[in-house]
Image (cartoon, rainbow, N blue to C red; front, side, top):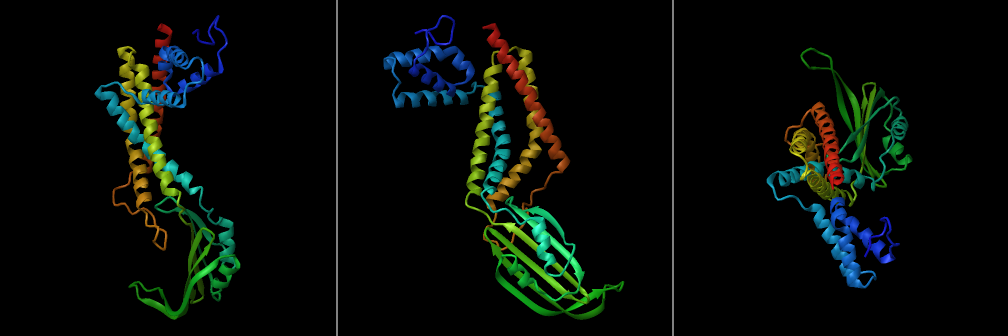
Length: 343
């Protein structure tokens, strides 16, 4: 059978076109060397008809096996393992981010400011944070002149369902002496509350007395069932991507010249070294995500006792690793082009 698409070739049949689409499961170099032979054999066996479902599935599985195949030498195998580890970390965090897209949007800064101002305290400071599981948190604090506590009414009026509220009289003090002793004491009142709305939780507290009122609020998004599965899925996909990337590079450079192979080796080594700090930090986030205590009534930040790396080191490592990856792909792509031209 004359393959379609070449000079003088007859037009291909629907069965042949379908088989050639299935060949996309194979690496490009393998398709170039064996694609015509595979299609010819399939159509000869099936009598120019569409092969059976089992034969088509077998073809795709064999193609995927070829994509994952590595040269049986220590260096490519070690590189594949390191690449799988390096890309599994960002894959996991990317999957976690997708998982959080299924959760409720956290309360906006403007809405939180409006809520505090409805309690009689103006100009609150609002900022964002993240739980140890990567969930969004919005926090607001405000200080103003003493006003009666109306936090419960304000929270309910904003559409929240108050699930707990407590208030008690206290004695307040102001430290004004150098030795740390109380310089003034007076009556005051503290209040604390917890409320929910949709998939959000709000906790707050206020202290009133001695002419001042302090209010603080935390709002965070509750976890959904999709977050951990998406995180694990991202981890697996990232690891597969790292292995496939190594297999593709190894296929392109295995018959290249010594100088090009050494260039790929040096670039890969530099990339792995640079990727170690960001991968380490991302794996810390992955571990915190998986062990996060969803039954804890309050949100919390990272509790891992392992040391954290500086932000500058992480960003520098990420940039160097990305540059090394781009350079490696360019060299590997050139090696594959030279080999095809020589053929």
